[in-house]
Amino acid sequence: MTREFSDHFLSFLNNTGSPYHSVDETIKILGRNGFTRLETESRIVRGGRYYITLNFSTILAFKVGEDFDLDDERSTVVITGSHTDSPCLRIRPNSIACNDGYTQLSVSTYGGGLWHTWFDRGLGVAGKVVDNACNEYLIRIKRPICTIPNLAIHLTTSEERSSFSFDKERHLQPIISKTDANDKYGEQLLALPRSLLDEICREINIQPQDVSSFDLCLMDSVDSRLSKADPDAHSGRPPRSQVQGARVKSGQRPGPRVLQDNEEVDLPER
Image (cartoon, rainbow, N blue to C red; front, top):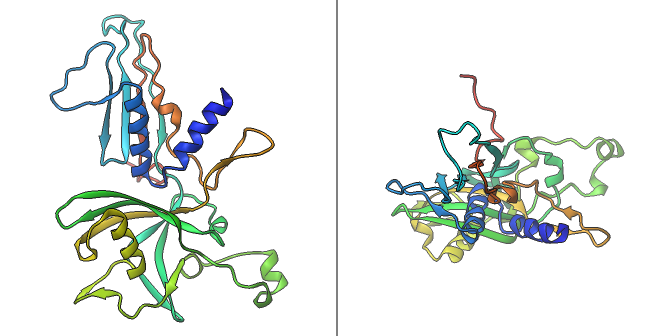
């Protein structure tokens, strides 16, 4: 049972990478377990299994028990929550930065991350792209498209190596390619480096000039996996929405599961 759960959990992690993909994978799990999207005109009935989404980055799923009765004090509701987001580097709206002959992605830190662990990893991309007709596309490029390199050992002092520190705005910006002097199509300037934009457009089969906006996260390109010595899961990404969120229990309790976005962001006091 432990191995079966681990396999499902790893499959979930290895098919996500952004809040949108976490919700998309959760919907697939819910669909396999008899859940349907709750539409405005839908009628909620006993024994029904439903889910709703918000911005396709937050999802709420619930089951109405066969014995649930609003007038029965024994019919209680227990809400459990998790989140679809996790600390990551998010690509800025105007992300092209050129330095010393190299094109870098301009990124911002999102959430409370251990940012020193992002160095020297192959980084892929996951998120959502919107075209000029307001069509939305999920995009996930698993293969490495950029990296944040450390300085070579011969160029650092022993003091620098023993107390590693960095400037997020200067040193945490990934290198994607050598500088391309033609980072535009016609007179339209690009918000993304041309090599990355071309890769994204090939994945979703649209033209570069048709890209209107995007919300993209960088992610570790190495799959999560099981240890050879024991069934423990090893992952470079903290788990986003929990797979248990799709396991809605039966009985008198509806047991809503809420998987929300923006948990990593400190909300202002109300």
